[in-house]
Image (cartoon, rainbow, N blue to C red; front, side, top):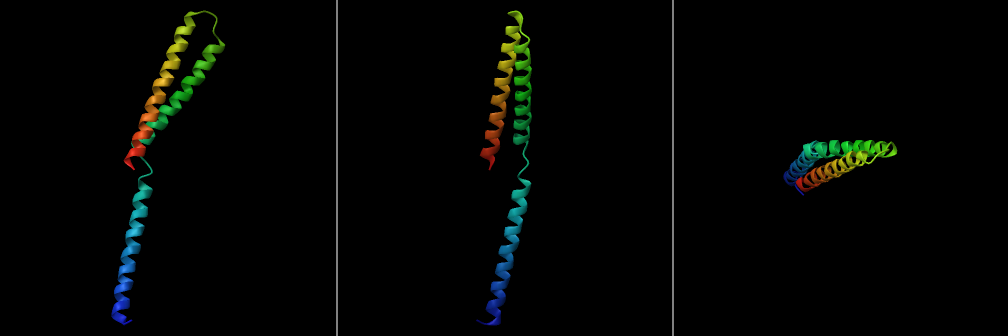
Length: 94
């Protein structure tokens, strides 16, 4: 091989290296997304509501508390659906 051909190969390999480094930087910055953030916050709220419901069930003495417990459970289910929706949207963006 001539020096000219080797130089062309070297330049091409450097371009490939630069493109690979750029792709790595772009994929690193894609790790954050608002969908993932909202899904995580909703998931934390679900855990808080479940804890709140368990504490409420342990303290139940009359049937009127059953209504508030059901509302807490339904709120937890709703927030769980929100979390799963945003995690699914974040997954679809990739």
